[in-house]
Image (spheres, protein in one colour):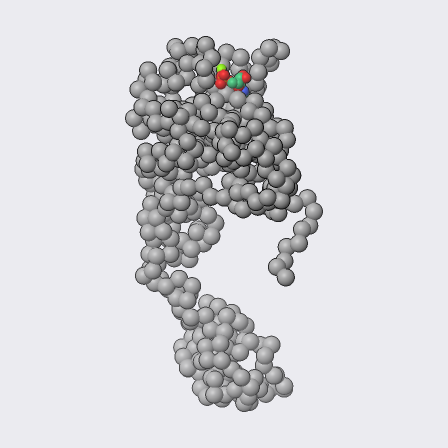
Length: 405
Ligand code: AMP
Ligand code: MG
């Protein structure tokens, strides 16, 4: 029986297990998922220091004339003590001296000849960066399940950590099925077709941080399919497309079942992409996507992405949506849970038209997917929609308003 979209996502969340771990240098760790909580071993900043180029002063000296003869630079280890009616010149990042109660920025001082006058109001601890105000020693600064980005690496480096424990790369093996398919680097006859799905999944899986292998296309016979499957069984995920519908030569599911696939999902109530099959051979996750490019892409985005997240050890495994409004009217046939591809410009979602299961060109333009219930036959212009993003960077071909006013 076909699963609903949410049932299929639930089955994925409950049946896919996280892959094993390794310890790698932090510079190599972008996109990886952390396997344990990381506790700060140092305060950050490690010592109280100046937030400005200025003067270390006492609060009681506000409005008074003071003398200054010493300077503290970043990197110094000052041993002096600040006295009353004294100001010690100090640079940004330098440790504050004993007795210092505040920093006054250079621009707030009145300097005349050798005389320095402090401003009338000086706030206790003003412009002092306190030890631990950023990251406090003993607290968790990086949680198990978080994905590492450049800013996570900054936190790790700021703690003097050279290595991090992460889940290893997910190994993905991809192959197409179909007698009509030829690789894109060969000459083809007019009745043949380039295999565009396999390079698409290869590229998308790489974008999502996987280690990807693409093997030859299998012909539409059980023997050819079984041979291809045998050579991919060491992967964490095998992704195929084609041969899962009701055609006379649609043998993909049979071939995988012959080799021990335990079927978790057999068809999904989704348009396009209903014939999708998801299963497991031992620990290897198998995803048989439909052959039609756009149908397979939709199912990749909804289900393979969810599988990759779960395998990779992320804790935030569920899709989430961005709420926006329709830029155009879009008519649907209704009666099925449908997926609509469209562009998003930061303000509106524009459904792409035409978009049909066998097409390639709408995928290239799409920024996101909108899931629509069977009773909806029209998405009205200006109505609110929830979009699952498939691209993240918001850019424009002209300078948009960037500021919040
Ligand atoms: P199938 O699911 O095998 O019946 O294929 C459905 C449609 O998708 C047919 O028109 C196939 O030629 C096409 N198709 C199957 N596999 C691919 C592929 N890897 N790249 C592009 N089109 C494909
Ligand atoms: Mg086929």
